[in-house]
Every structure is written in structure tokens, then in C-alpha cells.
Length: 630
Image (cartoon, rainbow, N blue to C red; front, side, top):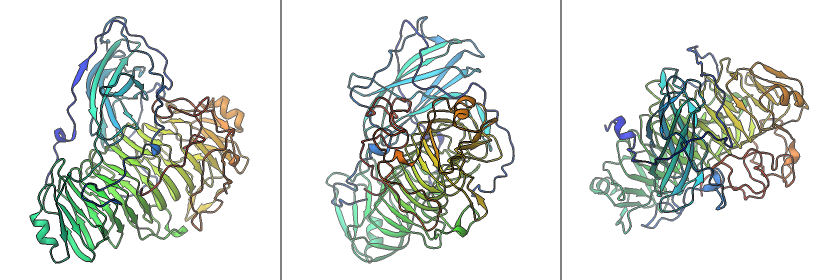
């Protein structure tokens, strides 16, 4: 088996340094949370809801006829975006004095995906956590800069058997595939330390066959011989028929993948195994399972995969690298019912299951599993889970978690997904320092009180522009253990009458109930409504009895009160989880309370339509994104 060395998993970065004559600390559009260290403990997790744990165009020139979609990510920056201030160091570049000044370390850009880049800048010092790194970016060869979202400040810490180093970390979003970008990073610390550096990184291209690739027609009788004889660049086109389970024996090469596809929806009775392979595409098959353990740059596209007895539909149980899982229909065996709810319910399977870095899981229709999309959990199982994109998926009837982004080390990006009928939409149990991004997701009918599961002392979660309509508390979490350094902005939460389902409490309709939020969390600019009229709640030690007290007694100084009239189309409240609901249209009504009241965040909501960004997943007036297969 091919085992990846850490040096293989981290890309080399070439850095050019810009010398300058000045350095000043200027205000940004958004700031990092809190000023205290994440004082995580080693408490044993006692939370019982913790889990234990494409091709429409099939000619030889393309596996897929679709690019990554920008509309499921943060809005595209407009051509008139503010470039922001030019970086400067008044006293020249240099390091500060420890312990509160910053000493700059290495910059790394590990595992670019098709649409996003991970940026990390290691440091020493800055014990008071007031250093910042601003970022601008541009396509190489162009002149105008665009502002990115400020990197998050990640102090060194440890949790659940994992540890991480002192650094700034974050992502550049919504980029073009197969494109080289220049990134300008400006590190400043009021206690000393100023550096400006420019780095380059290239996003991955959309996986396609080799131009002019030879096509070999395959039947059930010839499959094994054609697989054995395959060479880089070959396309094996499986004709109509039923095929036995098979393993792919040979590797492709960069630019010359081996493509196993069917233009006639061939059926595989069992597992298609791409484990230990590099540069292999599996396209357009109907199968019971697709595996890709220890693989590199495997693409799994436009397949239909039905769970049958085994635990996963599409899975890597051992670390793989840079998989592309897109435009598939993935269906589990779990029936949406009260008895199925929760990790211990009558449910089964992980529809898509991954570990390792750099994966892109986008535009799949995923339904009927315990966890519909899942990362591995725990020491020895969760390996290098960073730089992972989960984008534009249509997630339906998940009996436990819709997306279980547990044990994300940093820069996992859960963006632009639609969740309908889920026990818990999104899990970060835990985030290992962060950032773990949850951006522009839409949730309708979430059963448990938490829509974000911030358990096991989760650290560094970032929730921006999500729309949530659910029974019980609008925004809640009761992990019985502190969670740290969360950053919430521009979300829209509406709750209502609650209940108990399969022993699980959905809450009683408060707008916020997060008693385990640590005091270094940063929550503001969200909108809240409740069908109960109960605008009480709690965030950490701060309690409030009405909306005015929410504004005066918590960090929610710019929160907005709203209700279901903010939507352009009449929306029914999902008062009962059963039977399963269809996804409604949750775009905003012009002039409603959720329009033009958000905070501007570069590279997340740049190019908004009005005087300020709108709350929730959709900018008013924009078209509905595509969810699921394209």
C-alpha cells in the first residue's frame, strides 16, 4: 500500500519578500474573536449524541461538463471591490519581542482545491493574541488586488489527543480552477512585528480525460483483461450490462488519467475499488460501493451508489489525498422516522466517508444514511483532515449528522449546501483549533436543539451567512463542555415550538441557548425569530429575557429581530419533523428585515447588491443556486 509521507502532503511554497518603509495597524472589516487563550481541558466527552465512530457529457474529451460552481461559495467579488490599504511597515520589516510581539515563521499553502486556497503563517509569540494577518489576492498576471477575509488567529493548543502550533490560518474563497494566484500577506502586531510577503499558489483543475484519449469498449466478459492492459490516458467505456465487483489495478498520470466510465449506466454488483491508485476516474456507473483508500487524485463523478449491507457508499477508511467526489447520487438504507434519530437510533451507514487532506465533495445528492457526509473521528482514524471542501451538496434525510466535519484540523469549508430533514445539520465535534468554515448553508427542519454540533470542546468554528428554520431553539448547543473562539456573522435563525423525539430535546423555542459558549467567542450581526414569541436565551454566562437585553447584555450588539415574512415565497414552519419535508425556497423578500443589515466581510460577501450585505445564505435578488448534481 502506498503510504503518504507528510512531506508529500504539504506543498512547497516559493516566497518573494516585498521590502517596505512603513507598517501601521489599521482597522479591518472583521476581527478575530476574543483575546483569551482557548483554555481547553481534557474532560471526557459525555455527550450521548456523539457518533462513534459525472458525467452528462461522456465523449472522450470530458468526464464532466461542469466547473465548480461559484454560486455555492461566497459571492464573487465585483470588479469594483475595494483593494484595501496598501501594506506598509513604518519602521521596516522585522520581528517583535517575545512574549507579546510576533516572530514570523513559515508560510504554507497545503493542498489547494479547485475553488479555494488554504493559507497558514506560523509564528512565535503574540501571547496576547492581538496580531493580525490581512490578505489580498489576484490572478497572476493581473494588476488589481482583491481583499480576502482576514486570517484567523490560532494559538497553540491541544484537544482530544491532537495538538497544533501557534499561527494565523484561513482561506481564500471562490477562485477559478487551474489558475495561479498571487497572495499578499501583511502581518502586523501592535506589540512589535511587521512582515509583508507575497506567495503564489495554483488551484487544481477540474478532472477531465486526456485530450484525444483512446476509448476502449468494454463488456462484462472483457473487463478484467482491459483493466489489466490499461495505461495512462486510456478510457474504458463499460457497455450496458451487469459487472462483477472489481479493483482498478493500474495508475494514471497527471494529465493522463485512466478513466473507467459508462455511457450506458453499467451496473456493478458490488464494490468498485480504486484504493492505492493515482489519477483514476470512476464515472457514470451504478454500484453498491466505491472505495479509494490510500489513493491520490482519484475522481468519482456522476455515479449512482446504493448502500447495501456495507457501512459506506463512497469511502476512504485510510488516508487518501485530493479526491474529487462530485455530481453523484448516493442513497442509504435508513428510513426517515423518529426511531432512526440520533447516533444510537435505528439507522445505518455513512453515505460519503473520508479522511486525509484536500478532498472536494461537491454537488452530490446524498440521502438516507446515519451521517450523509462524514470525516473520521479520533486519534489513528482522523488523519490530516484539512483543506477539505464540502460544497453545493443536496443533503436529505440524515438520521444523525448531515455533514459530520469532526476532527477538522483547519480550513475545512462547508459551503453552500442544502440540508432538509436532518437530526443535526452540521457537526464540528471537535474543531481542532480551526478555522472550520460553515458558510451560506440552508437548513430546513433540523430536529435536535443544535444545528451546529460544537461538542468535545470544539475550537475555532466560523459560521457566516447560514439560513436555518427549525423546531425548538433557533440557535442552540448543550454539549456540557465549553466550546471556544467561535465567530458568527450574518446568519438567519428562526425557531419555534419544540418537543422530544426519540429521547432528544429540540429546545423550547428560545432564540439562543448556548450555555457552554466560552467568553472568547464572538457573535454578532445575526438575525433571529421564533414562532413562540420567546426572545429569551443565554450565551455563556450572559442571560437575557427579551430582544433588547440580547443587544445590551451579549456580544450581539447588531442582531436583528425577524420572522417568516422575510422570505419572498410563503414558507411553512416545519412544526413536526415527520413526514419528511421538501426543501422550500428561502430567498429573501426585497425590503425585508434581513436585507442590507449584515457586516461586510471581504471575499465572503463582496459585491453585495444593496447598501450592505443581507443576512442568511442568499443575497436578495440573486438566483437560486444549484444543489446536488449539475
